[in-house]
Length: 119
Image (cartoon, rainbow, N blue to C red; front, side):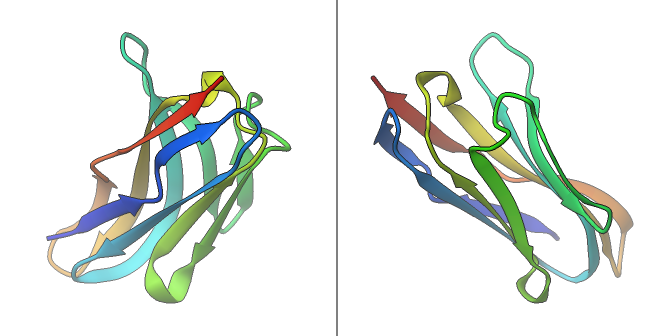
């Protein structure tokens, strides 16, 4: 069974910074794409940043402020968030497309971590 566990969310003031972490565990053969999504109540979950062998992509709303990175040895992905705005307030979810020994290709989600940016 694969688990994605996020950490690093919390409350921060406008202009502040936070770093989210996500580690995938289980009988993982290899991890392909790793992403961060976010969701606010009443809205669809949106892609914030993605990292894979082709590089990184970002939502227009976070370009220049957020940086995604990964540690392949530890099946981990990070999201460094700077110059935070009130509109960045959301639950942030880690996602990974990965291969396991038992089940092959899986699309796995973390449980989410709350980020709140106060005025």
